[in-house]
Amino acid sequence: MIRIAAVGDVHLGEDNAGLLRPALEELGDRADVLLLAGDLTRHGTVAEAGVVAGEFRDLPVPVIAVLGNHDYHGDAERPITDLLQDNGITVLEGTGTVLVADGHRVGVAGVKGFGGGFAGKCASAFGEREMKRFIQHTEQIADRLRAALLGLSAEVRVALTHYSPVADTLHGEPPELYPFLGSYLLAEAIDAAGTDLALHGHAHFGTESGSTPGGVRVRNVAQPVLRAAYAVYCLEPAAEPVSPSLY
Image (cartoon, rainbow, N blue to C red; front, side):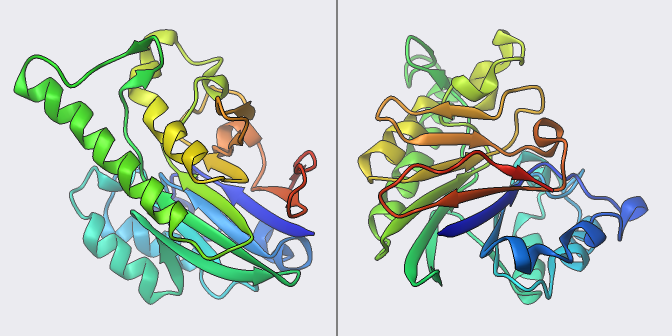
């Protein structure tokens, strides 16, 4: 059984350094890997990223992350990524990584994602340059996610994003915000790659469970949704995950 711990939207700042770490000390007994679904900082500063590094470095399991919109706010996403990776945290953006858990090769591909909306109620690359650039950016990110997932040499594939690939896990958010919380293009990439599980954050008032049109299980692991330090999802290769355990 493959045990995947996940959380997003921890929004760490210099005033809460050390608060999350105690909840992670038993992680090695509960999970094989920890996935972080973006918005690790509040305002995207390198100082805040230092707090993130302090919370998540030297854990007994590999830590894999994507950044979120908050982590981009200070235009310091490159030094934030470098700092996290210098502390042993793998940061994905259109890339993937493979680890071995319970004797199986588990591949994780990740992107931040972007907005645009969902089938039937979405924007398109038409009209003003600004609108076309908005949607083209999402298209490019979705293409990178698809390529990263397909490039994984693994028995189990997991997609890690910040923005949501489906509307299912946004229920509870104002509908007017849906176009800014995710895009169906991410779900198309996930479905095209034979993905086993998709994890995202961003939607603080959404719901935990959903699925793509192709039947891939999607879980919103934003900490305000989980109301826990993290959730653990257990996967048997070629089988459905059990309900999450919350810690």
